Length: 464
Ligand code: PA5
Image (cartoon, rainbow, N blue to C red):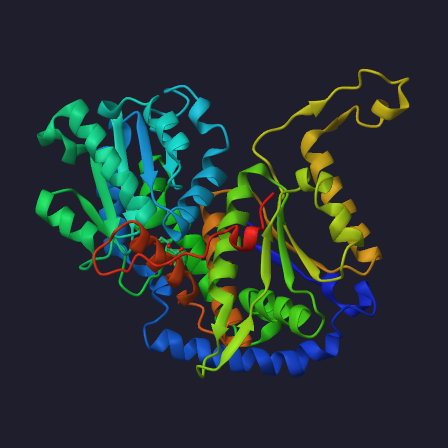
């Protein structure tokens, strides 16, 4: 299998023209920026802050994941992952890429008796009742995932689920349908796991939510539906090794970060559009969107000075969004870079028959194949963007297998920490989401939080 590749000709001046990056800068100024970023990332690695880098070598975690998955996997008809943000997006991206978008429509035999898979993310009563009204709680395992063990959306849904399980099964059987993934020692979910004897998995203390896909947060739901954690981690380890390269041109994560940062800071391209041409990667775009946004959008630099910085990621899907966003990408403000994701070989093959040879608008499609059309559309879009001086990058994998997913996850996580160093911010924290959380706690009556006065949304009579 060929390793993941990154093509970046279409951000460089020879192909793109005046808005592109001068190749000399790659070996000069940008290489120096990269060395400074690398030095900071090395310090973070040495101080143990970058726990996600240790995950591929954590044999104990893989053993535990396998044991838990073997004991639960094919026993249940449904697996419901209850979590939000970093506690859900990685597992969604991994499982959708490897199981496909219609896993739940497959028969038991086609799923090899692995469970159907559902996610409860938002605190939306409609999605909750729709799902819980259709699955049989007696044949369902709920994996409650929360690093803090206190996220309101997750814990509220857990409480509702527990009540439903109790009503359906009786109190003593509830624990057999629950599996917690949380901090190894802190937080209410850990306390509950211990008090109630609920099986649980640990998210290492130095692994934050959006960097946790290679921990039990992503790998356990994956293993329960038959995805080999070792293969994912092997791909991740291989990418981490490639990204140790000290030369910018040889370091894929360094290049993603340096090129996107330079296009933003030196060229005003602050909107970073991730556009996979594969339905199975739609959730990877959403995972990347959260990773890039929450890690790099910051109000304080590394010296504590106030800043308002960070690129805006935008999740898209090719070719669907050619019929939605492309007009803006082609002719709107020159503030965007597109990051195409391509898998060379799809699993399926759909021949397009030649049925109307005399109908010019249909005849050209005949005797070809759907995957060919999709790739031609991607190439045509990249070329059209290039011709109008709009930059794009291409990340390419042979096929969507567990190794390739490991490579992709590690590539973008490392690019994010390099990005933090380049933008001069801490990519591992998220202080900006705290105020909203505190206000929510206060409004919901949590002890120790004031029920703040909210400005009316129609103050001053601004309502029609
Ligand atoms: O990346 C992050 O830290 C966040 O997106 C969290 O994953 C999200 O807020 C959920 O937090 P928790 O896992 O504590 O429930």
